[in-house]
Every structure is written in C-alpha cells, then in structure tokens.
Image (cartoon, rainbow, N blue to C red; front, side):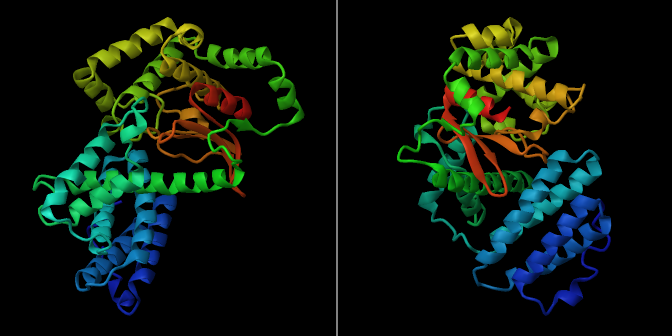
Length: 385
C-alpha cells in the first residue's frame, strides 16, 4: 500500500469541512483500505490526515471529539500492522499509525507536564511495561492511565528522549487505549449482571448446568478431557509458550496473532529471562495432564487448561499448523493476543486487573459466567464449550 505519491491529492475538497468531519472521513477511508486492501482508499485517508495535521497545528483549541475518532482509527490500524504479511504494507501502515498518534498529540487534550512530574510519568510507564500476568496487582497500572502518561510525555517538550521512536509509542498508545475501551464495555455489562458481590462466581444455569453443578466429578472429568487434548508434542509447545506469556513482562510480549511466541520474543526470553524459559520448558516436558492435576504452580495449571482448549479448537477448526492458526479460533481474549474476528457466539475474556475470567456474548452484550483465578477459568470454560 504505497501512500507516498499522492497522499494529499484530494485535500482541496476538504478545506471547508470541520476537523471532526475530516477525521471521520479519514477513518472511513482507512476502514475501506484495510477491509478491501485498497491503495487508493489508504492514500485518500492519509491526505485527509495531513490536512487535519495542518489545521490542528494552526489552532489552539482542544479537540476531544477528534481524539475519540483517531483512537478508534488507531486501534484498527494497529491491529492491521500486527496482521500484515507484506513488509511494505506493514511499513506503510506503521507510518500511518505514527501519523495518527501525532494527530492525537496535536489535539491538545493533554497539557504539557511540569518538569517535576516527568519522573512519575516515566515510572508509571515502567510499571505498565514490566507487568506480568502473575504480578502483584497492588501496583497495577490500568490501560487508560498508561495511555494518559504516554500521551502527556509526548505532549511535553523534552518529555521523551530524542532517540524515542514515534512508531513504538503509537503502537503502545493505541493498544492501551483499545484495551481500555474494550474492557470498559465488558465491565459495564458485568455491572448490570452483578449482584451485591462483584467478585462472586456465577454461570448461567441451564438444566444440564444444574446437573453438572450437582456432580463435581462430572465437571472435573470434562476438564481433564479438555486438558488431554494438549498431550502431544505440539501441545507441549503451546503449553510452554502460554506459560511464558503469563510470566514475561508486557513490554517483551506485545500482542501477537499466533499461539506460539514470535521468534524475536522467544530470542529475548532466552537472553533476558533464561530461568523463566527453563521453568516453562520443564513444565511443558512433563505434559499438560500432569501440570493440570499435580503441578503446585497455579499458573502452570491455568496454562495446561488453556493449552487443552487451544488444541481442541485447533482440531475443530481443522487447522493443522499451530504456527499460523488463529489462537483458540478467536474464542479467547487475553492481553498478549491480538483481537481477531470469530464466528463463535460466546467468548472468554481475561480481566488482568482483577485476575478474573468472563464469558460474554454480543448483541446485546451479556455476561454468562465469571470467576477469579483457576477456579474461575474452570467455570468459564465449562460455560464456553
């Protein structure tokens, strides 16, 4: 998708429109470009974004409504960067993502920080990047807080190092904002379903579910059957990389489109976190069934159950290559996996802030099951399948 040649070819017709209208038209063009692989639509979008840049630079007004549109567009383009196969397309999309982030800064919704606040903002981002899914939640930094800190640093002259790369900042910002928006919708639906105790475990109760609730042995048998699906060499690879995904820091993991860690992340894990890599490898060699039933490490048991679910969905979808298959056939949403389209009505989402799993469906957004930790995951998987 080369966009260099005529990025501003149709800017003249937009001169009389307001900034919000220009941003919305650019987002529509980007959506068309991504859905239809349209070079022309991408060029038109960039032309509108360049016009918007000129207008924002000439104005001192806040543009909160424009930021919301740019954040939505950034989330779409950020996912497209992850899924791009062609390196030229990936490079072009990454440049567009950087432009979107620059426009968010120019909207001036985040005032520059005084010099004495800069260390605290940098520490917020350090904690956010260092977070792992087994970390203590006492110092947890929510996605929207991290995005705000990042935006304020980039809105402050001298707030970032001269060598800082806008493309990486854009990826972090839009990933954090999209995660915050997504979880906000899930929590809003959860609030409507909750009784007095928000942490209480529950699941929807069909006749079959009532019978299972009365027979815990039946539940455990079903769960063991799921885990047994990962008792293979490929299942061991999936288990190893899922364990690493719970143990490694967010900054190293990013968000990926496959069950297995990307090559660069695996290489860094070996160099920077050799002990964790060895731990995950040893657990995988013992196998998912043993990890689920006998491993004292709760995270290994969680990942054994998830690896069984992953292999089950791999078989159902008839996808033989675990290196390219859609993780969990799009049914499971965890921070280290990029969101992917799915035909499944029910999906499982992990709320990392409070270590809680939820099964939900859309139209209308409804929560069907919820629970914390390993027991919560068991409840949700039984509801899911």
